[in-house]
Image (cartoon, rainbow, N blue to C red; front, side, top):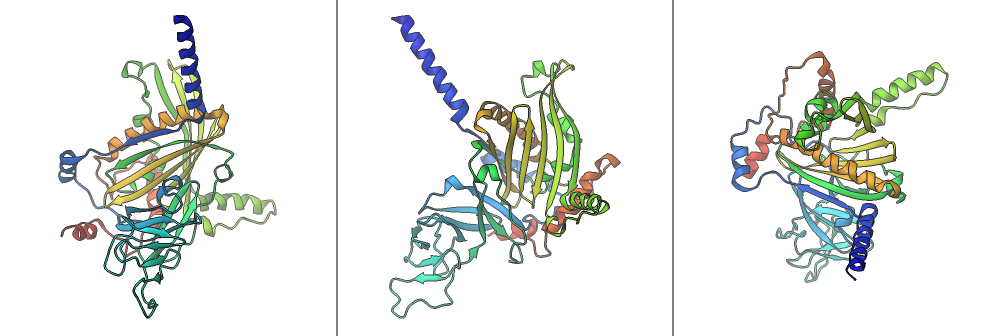
Length: 406
């Protein structure tokens, strides 16, 4: 009897584990220190002469699964309070959370009525697409045309909800594109991680151009320190370039072959970094080779295409400013179902590796005039490219600090 119980328990445990390996989801959350410790960190930290804190572009506010049909949620980011809701027909809309009537927060207690969002204070309703007030229950003369909430351009793609932010209120000139394997559900969602980081937003994507940090920060093993000499990570073949340069070079080659060149004007918001990873045992055996191509699309969105021995995978990274010097960073992992076990292993390794970067970012100072050597040329190149996402009117750290001191 005892043997039968043990066998049944073992089989059940194995089946549960097998199910999780293929169908379970990783959720990894890491926050900056809370309370007094975080206050002390900020008080004694040297900020440096930093660029504007909120660049222009598309920023992820939530995963698609976080906003159900008929649900509304307040999300604070980019110095704004957003009411993000999904209509009863499943369309995502974003408006300024504060009702233009008497300032009630429609993201907290608001109700979705068909395609509109209803304020919890006086039941005024607003169209999320136009911001126009569509209904005032006690207005005998109808709704004045001038009454509007502020609508925001939004986009739902790759299981993410994006908002368009521009300090001059200019409309978008580019959009994140759907990744076919995600949009057609041929790849499986493996899970996500979430980090809150105390740094300037530009520090995070700058890592893609800073190949020299890979050996120092990500070379040591993710395993116990006793194995650090036996197990190491190798990062080679690193490169960084803008998509415009990449396509211009390709166009030049096509022109030489009498093939019409590809237009490059619309790709200036994209940069690409590539590298190769190997796990090295005893300085001899190479394992877990992964070729990574990361497309930085705008200031806060990255698509990482991974080619492994077990098949392709994709990690989608988002960086969203939730405060003047605080960023919310997420990574969503997707892969074919059959590669789920390996994809989860890669995802766990990525969580540990990214935490090493976070530990640096949380305490570093932004250097606007860094002392660089010739091998650091891609950092200068990256900063010139990233400047396109700032406007003269983009909020500065000082202006944001002043607005919070009341």
